[in-house]
Length: 153
Image 1 (cartoon, rainbow, N blue to C red):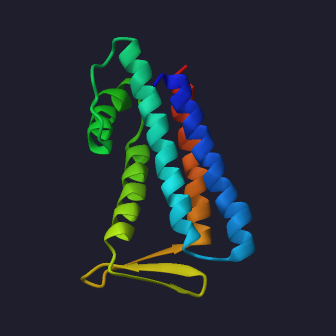
Image 2: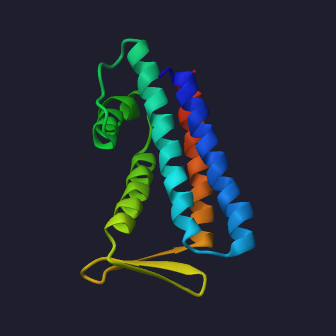
């Protein structure tokens, strides 16, 4: 897939996340929707990262970068971040989103309490998602997607 299509998909996933949070969540107040928002943010950043990697591959700067999120992230960290002078915050944020999704998938228990989604693992380590936290993540994801898309021009 060419990098223009990937950039478009990144933008589309951000719009879906924004709609889920600003419209759907505000109407139904169902904290379980917050996981869907996080998922769309993750995919949006992943598509933006792939678009930049494809752009760099087409320009001959990098070679194949693999098909897994981990292999793409490693190529991004080793080659793209230094080349474009990107700080580690963007990578840390992508990892945080991925970890949240992984914890949700592996969780043995999840429940809602006072408009929060509480995710628990087998050792009863808890992670909570609130609409306010996810709004901050949405704003940050929008910035990072725009930054990455601007680099792949």
